[in-house]
Image 1 (cartoon, rainbow, N blue to C red):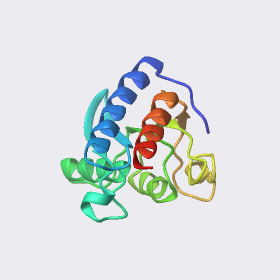
Image 2 (image 1 turned 90 degrees about the horizontal axis):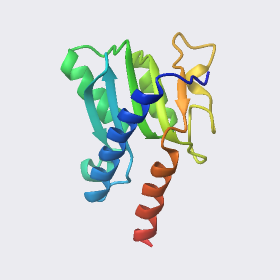
Image 3 (image 1 turned 90 degrees about the vertical axis):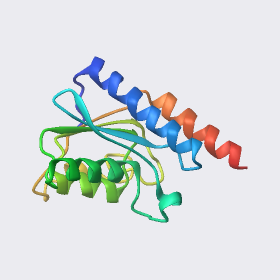
Image 4 (image 1 turned 45 degrees about the vertical axis):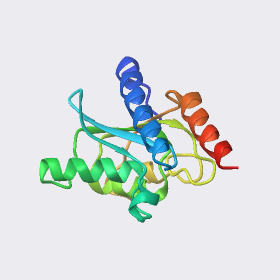
Length: 155
């Protein structure tokens, strides 16, 4: 279910997610960033750390969800909104569902593994006990540009 709400806040927090993506790129990680917001406040941040942590699960979304769960001493993150620069993969979509994230906002679609709408529609699957409405395409061009520049520099 694609949701279009909160345009000004979505832009503000997506800029913060892009800052996390840029920070990930500076340490050699794929530039994907995420911030988790509750009641208009950022409660957790994350950038990709898969390479540095030697952890295939250390995607930006997972890093942010883990930080928030520790902060709240609760794996349920109801009423939060996750902002991420790239459409989440199936693993990250599953984590959002398990955490009961209320809403997702992301930048660019991921044609090679997106699990919101591009390859899978995991977040709105009717058989699941929780669905995550989402807004796509917020600052997508900036998100794509970061990824393209990162991979071009590796060639």
